[in-house]
Amino acid sequence: STVAVDVNAFWENLTGVGWYLYRILQELRDRDDVRIRLYGPTMFVDPHDPQSVIALPEGRAVELVRWVVPDDLLLSRGLLIRILRRLEPWLVALAGDEVLFAPNFVLPDKFRRARGRLVMTIHDRAVRCFPWTLSEGTLEALEGHLERSIERATAIITVSETVREELIEAGEADEERIT
Image (cartoon, rainbow, N blue to C red):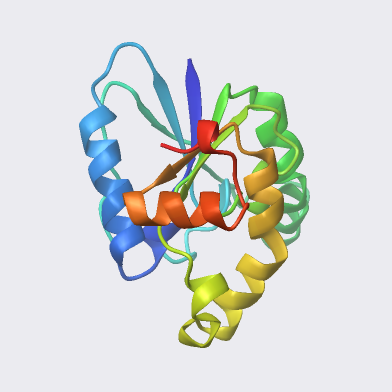
C-alpha cells in the first residue's frame, strides 16, 4: 500500500508534531509492506527554495515526492513553477495513494482532491479549549479546516487517552475511529 505523508513540519523548527512525525517515519522507513511518499511544502522546487530543517528520513520504503524544475524550458522557471504548484492537488490525486496521513491536525491543501483514506493525528484540543494560546495563523487554519478533516477521517490518532476522551465527550468524533 502507499501512504502520502504531509511532512511540512520538517520545514519549520521542530516542535512536538515534527518530532512525532520524524520518529514515526524512522520506525517505518525500511518496511517492505508499505510505500511512504513524503510531500513537503511543494512538489516542484526551485533551487532557491528553503530546505527542510532536518534531514528527511530515508529508507527502502521512503520516497520524497519532489522535482527540481530546470531552467532551460520555453517558459521561465518561475512561471512554470507557479503553474505546476497550482496543479499539485490534481497531481497528488492522480498518484492514487491509498492512505493520506495528516500528522498535524488537518489535511494539507495539496491532498484535498486525493481519495485515499485519511488518517489524522489530533495532539490536543487547544483550538477549542485555549484558542488564545495559538498563533493567529494556526488558529485560522484549524478553525477553517479541522472540522472538515475530522469528518473526512477514516481514522484519528490521539497522542493521549485524555484527548481521545475529550473528542468523544465533545461529540467531535466517533469513538470507533479514534486510536
